[in-house]
Image (tube, rainbow, N blue to C red):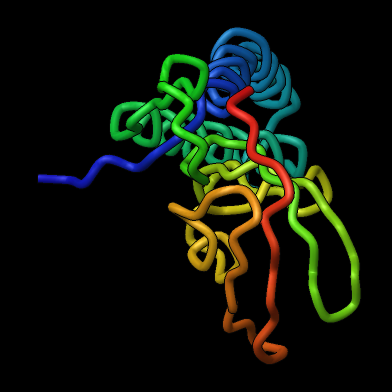
Length: 159
């Protein structure tokens, strides 16, 4: 039995959109490119054909990967979870680094959704593991690769 992987509603929708694009837009374009490349003669020396086949392989692999992720996802809609004032998967948290006074806001997401540039932090990151279950004004000592850091939870939103 395969364990389910937590995923936000937004993350699941992004994967569904990518899957739809790959299946109904990209796949037909690749098939057309292969068909056209075949008409150019000898397939052994046909770079267009080999490039199209390689792209097809990548596309089909990504389709299978997305279908697998979606079939094993435990999709969590944070808006349907009662707000008990604790940091949980899917919540948006504002933290204050007590050492350098930097403040940042992030959303807690699954591994596949994580994107530091968009402030989407994985449930498995050291910072999030250190604050999960905490409440506003709690302070947590987080062990990071760069050393221990204390974070104070300033705000928790279920949006």
